[in-house]
Image (cartoon, rainbow, N blue to C red):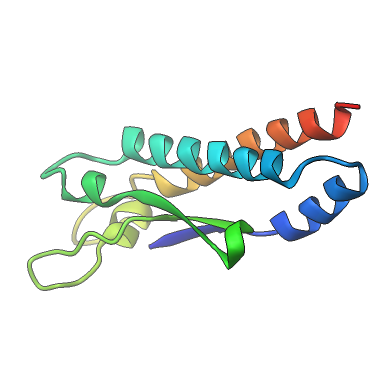
Length: 120
């Protein structure tokens, strides 16, 4: 299961026009990714700890997109994060951890980028 945060390329272009350093944008993206990963790890059920331990953030598209990944697999080799997130009849109700992580990551990114845009 993955969560994507897109639109960073457009934001970079806008910030460059305002003479914001690309390195500062990268730091904002990094903070957002770190926050999203931490929120997901804080919220995920920790039955065996395998799903918790599999959660990580990484950057793709030259750093324009951050992905929070939870690739834990069950004993049959099937990734199961989506079953935890959305719930199933067999295994019970949803236990949201990725959506709140995405939401918090977005909040951090928006706040960090606002600081860059407002800085002269």
